[in-house]
Structures are given as structure tokens and as C-alpha cells.
Length: 66
Image (spheres, rainbow, N blue to C red):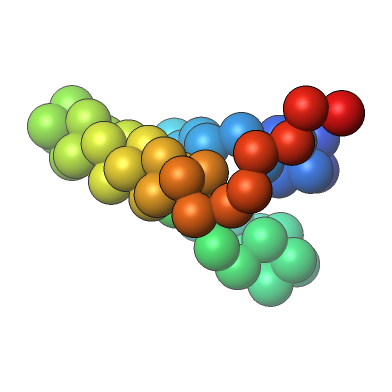
């Protein structure tokens, strides 16, 4: 599933009870991971940051209408 989301450039946070296995952490080094339990405000702040970064990246790239 992560491969699909990353491939489609979809912003997401991994919210898990344990750290990512080393192989996944290496393969997807840019992922944001929040270990449970964590305050909801932390998740919201991380998602706001990720969405803002995504919007900046979209604004900087030329529009494609293919």
C-alpha cells in the first residue's frame, strides 16, 4: 500500500504501535511516522505541515493537462 501512495504522491502519515521495520524505513526514508499513543494535536500538526509542503511543490511545478 505504501508503494501505491508514494507512487501517486499522496500525502500520508504512518500511525503505528511500533517503529517501521528497518527495510521499510530505508526504502521510504521520507515517511512521517507517529508511534501510538501520540497526542492528536501532533498528528494534526504533522499533517498540516505535509499538506503545506505538498501544496508548495504543486505550485512550483508546471501544470499538466495530459
